[in-house]
Length: 134
Image 1: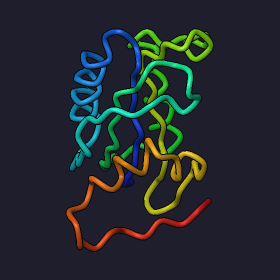
Image 2 (image 1 turned 90 degrees about the horizontal axis):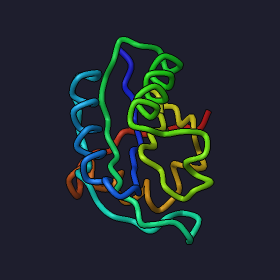
Image 3 (image 1 turned 120 degrees about the vertical axis):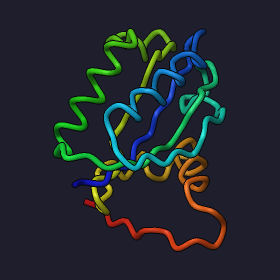
């Protein structure tokens, strides 16, 4: 069983609905899901609409590559296209940030929209898993 850390966000007009879909998707495809809950952040580019975000952790029998492919398929099902970022409206963005304890997207791991949610995964003072860069 692999343990995955995911970053999820949406900034389209129906972002709240998209995030509800993401919560269902997580429950349907992962075991032992733990979530930061949904929170709002400014777009990383400083120009697009604010995002609703969530950081989630869960386990799966799938490989990291399979989880990434599953995430991209979910994005497409939510209406994400290659033009989404260009238009400034991202229906769904799901990134696999870490697999087991290895960070596979170190740039994302340090961005404010991710670190805010990551800090919400564990209660204050709890022992946090150690992550290493790939």
